[in-house]
Image 1 (tube, rainbow over the protein chains, first blue to last red):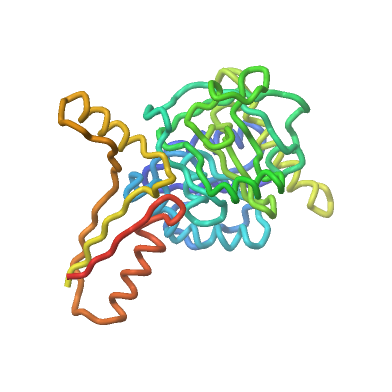
Image 2: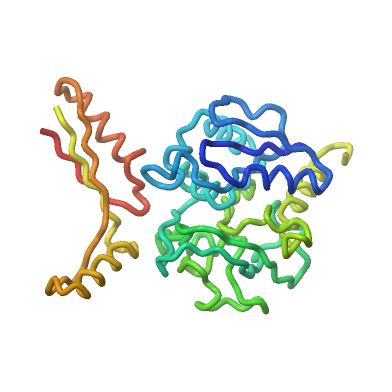
Length: 235
Length: 78
């Protein structure tokens, strides 16, 4: 399966994303922000970093880049798009996901491992997660506090669009386990159609035991399982 | 013509920067500072004043310069 990884000036997790895909035995190529087509890829990863220096707002400029128009078209046609960290901020700015990410409630940049619970194990981004498994994944962000109107949060909950929540090591949701003040401990969400998702933690940095955890592989494995299952020959 | 744009976090959105400014001002003894909100200010130099140009800048405020989910803006021309 072939992934494309976007590259903006200021992206810094693009190589981690490509490395993670290659480590799982699949293909990955970069898409530069000035490109106007996503080519023949089967899924897109929007990596973390500080695209365009986070000028104006995180993701605000990247959202209007040429490649994003192609990504929006790809997503509208049902293609799988996962935004990680700055990629999540870009997807919210683009309106592909509801809500926004603002400065962490505790005012500090958080760089550490956290625990997540996959809330909906039927999505293309969570279907490979073993039941009842708490996922150990690193975070690194200063603006990861997820906010949205109360009605939007209620809609997300009702339609199973909250995909990951911050928990403690035993999978319990608590204020102590919430690193940034996100509403309802939300670490990541999907769109109603379930083909676009975003999260603040970095699964691509946790795909090998050497990295301190390999739970991140479940994100890519879920996407791979979804795409290969949709192909007529099951290849 | 100039456009002067002030962007502020919505009242319902937590503003940690504003909280920090308020706390520090209090610590420094600047008196009865009850709340601070930190936003941003933009100044655009524009061509000749036309209704179309005003509309375009208004649209830019809504679609690009501010994020209506978390921010309000005030636009003034002079």
